[in-house]
Image 1 (tube, one colour):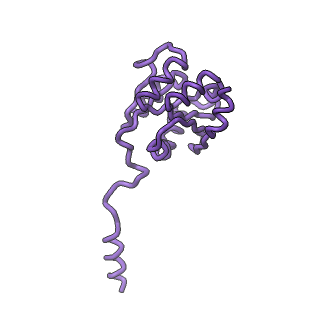
Image 2 (tube, rainbow, N blue to C red):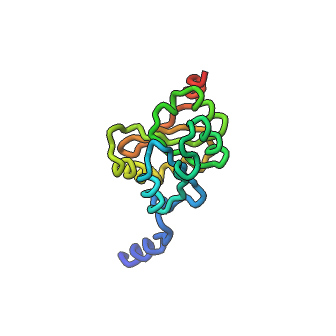
Image 3 (cartoon, one colour):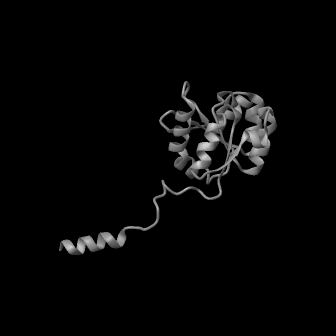
Amino acid sequence: MNSRKTSAAQKTKSSKPSAAKRKPPDLVFYVDECLGRHIPRVLIAAGYNVKPWYEHFPGQEDVDWLPPVGVHGWILLTKDKNIRRNTLEIHAILNSGVRAFVLTATALRKEEQAEVFLKAMPKIGRICVHPGPFIFNVTRMGYLSRISTKTLRRRQR
């Protein structure tokens, strides 16, 4: 009887990598200037498709680069908490379909910030199969919480 259980278990085991280990193939991440140069390097080394700020919109105001990020379908990674509150920036996010993830933890070293984003990437990938606009907070533990569109529209006024 044990041999049947073992063989049945072996037949049902998948040879595919787990969903947590697979990287979404078509996702492109735009890393904001406030995260520096270390995080893009870490994400690239981990196999993610990254567009760092210094190669695309260096020195530009947020309201100027947010629309192209949304139009390209890139996913914004930032720690700029004001992006969730500034009327013009919220307007740019909502009108260009930006999918944004904001690191809310403060006083983290760059290595810790990179670790948080790497930990959250499987969840970010699952969320980003849906179109934007949206903003999610990313906590120190890698938990994600969505800011409701209703709240964003209220802040936009």
